[in-house]
Length: 156
Image 1 (cartoon, rainbow, N blue to C red):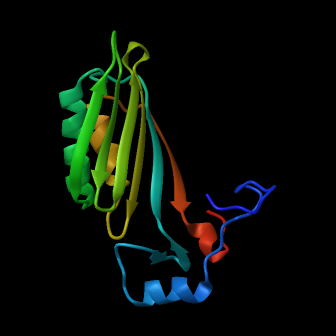
Image 2 (cartoon, helix red, strand yellow; image 1 turned 90 degrees about the horizontal axis):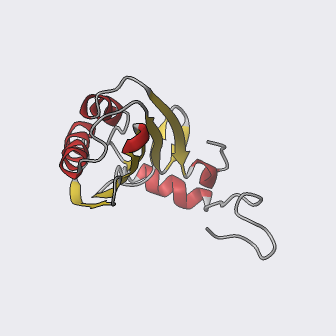
């Protein structure tokens, strides 16, 4: 994150040239900034917490969930990498042309922490139902962050 010396990024929001942002949006670069509801932003980042979930220690199940989520969200899956820890737990990343999905799991307590960040026309909200079904739970909390909204002077 860029910031002035002595200031953190949280104290000094990053700003882009308004003309540069507008040019990108007008050029219909759907793989970049999005204009929706009178807002301009880079993409939608969901923090998805699954609780009382099953299968969180299974790399194949996590990989399959990433594949299905990418497909249903309209994203292009480039690569998946997962790592199984001993005695339990999995961390993983799915690299998408539109950004990424990540996970860290604590199967011993039925908890999985997923991040889904997508740009362009991809719809990350469709991943929520995929994760509910894949990990057999309705106990899910979701928070949304519109990434890059502050570039245009907005608060996400």
